[in-house]
Image (cartoon, rainbow, N blue to C red; front, top):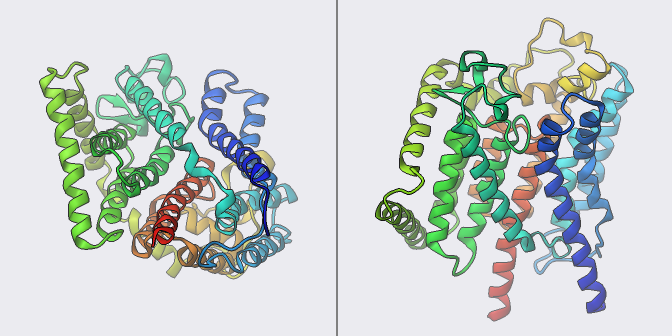
Length: 433
């Protein structure tokens, strides 16, 4: 099919602005809810907009076409199958209300809607054009986070997390500071953004002639962001993600070369900072953030020791009701339960993470289907398979992508961005051969 270049340009521009809307709604909606419409019906409405904004992808201008090696075959059928199963489980007669089912459908469907529509229409998904937006949003996010982290617990910027002293902060305390979970993107948005930032950094590594000093600065900035977030899961995802990408995404010599260039870039940033006599006291701040993070890890060592492999125990030894088809979508989601009533089948059974909730809502049928979806992602992506397998395992162990709407959007956009950058690099090389 031959498409007029002007029409194609206009269509890509429209799609780009839809992507900008999806990203900015996710990034800024929490801040608006926190500072402008706190504890009001408008705050709930804004959250609802954030929840359904992935469906903007239906307004994308797209034409069915195969990418250069026809990797996107049958993706539409996979999405239809997944949607049909979700509808079936949303109407589970064991469910509390139809509202639970509808909300559960949205939560389970939207991540894969973004991923599979992208995989089917890569050439109409101009996410690679948003580099500057992602770069400036990331720097702004970390600066704002550092500012909040340096403030006392009773400061207004920490108002959502605490109502007074550090002692009242509970899990929000990281040593003598308040971990940055509520900045800019509301409750857990900062940690979710770092997950997206991991993919962003990996994409920067792929780009030819990308400034290695800037790359070293961005990687260091991400490490600092992990420390001030106080999240062990986010820190593990970032560090494992970066190193595994370096190791597995190129041959050995290229990996060593890339690692050396990054180290040189980081060293240059450190030496420049020392030469300028550390004008913003960044070394002390990084050291304080690491010390506080280390103390949090030590204080919660027993709790976090089995968290990474907990999902395996849940899969092998699920202790909830209706293990085959579940008790209905949305029944394990706290937001749905608070709005529409709690499922009686949850009584006396504390949920044990996202995998447990998936089995509770849709049984092993839904879990098996999700594993199949990840297989399709693994098969269709241009991202290195070993790296992607590690990312999938990290998602299962530390990153809920169903019941956390920030993770849902940021992980999906991060995977799409990294895949698109790699795809364009490979396409360019093929065209030059």
